[in-house]
Length: 315
Image (tube, rainbow, N blue to C red; front, side, top):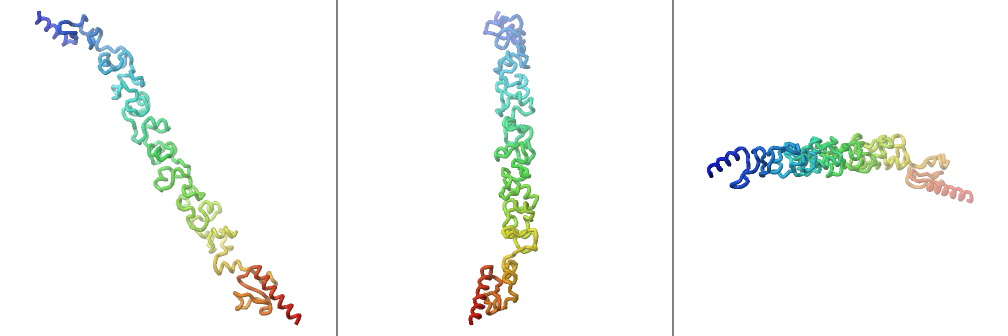
């Protein structure tokens, strides 16, 4: 009898029947009706139609009556095919459910599908492309842009005419339209050949933005070549684009700006050489004059001449 029982048990076990204890078999009539735990039923059945047998679901801990145990939009059987965890709605913990990742084309087992330093979920939140490491094609990866504070969806965050990646290459500020605050945007400075770190590229006293507005050359200290710096001309009220009206510093500038005594005082004669730098009375020259005096000096010379004339008449 013992030999018969062992023989029968071996025969049943080889066909998948489960021994409940050492002396009793399951009460199923056939082995195909026996589940893994000794319960009756087909052990390969898939009652929820998720692609995983009920038997396997019990082993894995998923719900054999629920096709999507973790509710991530991916059937339990599909999760197994993708290498996902059927018990975790977001296998790679990137902020996107496994189902959304499969639908969107990202990798549900990789937190950063495109390797740009930004998790797939963050990319979606920022409006970036989780399948492109540089969504705006500006030369900076999306993760790098987020760290810098630039917009990973706009190639030129500060709208200065230079892409964000270019600005980092040049050393200009991708968050400031005009790095040196001279009134000329960084892109315009590059186009003009100006220094984006020096507000006055040519050192003429006018910032680059002013020069562009005035029509002067921000790369030439003396646009009209008249001998005066553009900034000096603007301060003096002369035209920095007309070399004929320049009032330069030094002797030439003094002569250009000299007071015209012959015209203002009515003197007929000129100044003697000995009186070029000193005042001369009418008694000495018949006319008061100077090359460096102004209106006040001219009046003083004329007064001296008048005093001398009155003295001669009294005599």
